[in-house]
Length: 105
Image (tube, rainbow, N blue to C red):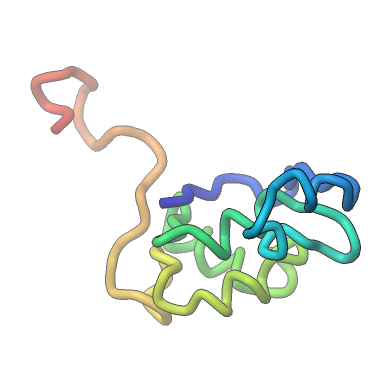
């Protein structure tokens, strides 16, 4: 599972890392370089946004920071957007009540 919080920080770097990554390196190729987030999106069983609104944002051209295409390609693996999946996103924060280990289950 990959949890996405801020797509503006992708960690893109040079293409020399593709050889270091090994046989799955092609998943990390990004415009002639290497982007760890594209590989993670491609290889994760599920991609989780921090809220349903965030899921909708990252699937759009305006909010996807260039990763909207790979995210849309994953279809139902992206959790948080009712258009793609019936599950809810993992919400930011711990819940409506006071924090505590007894209540946080």
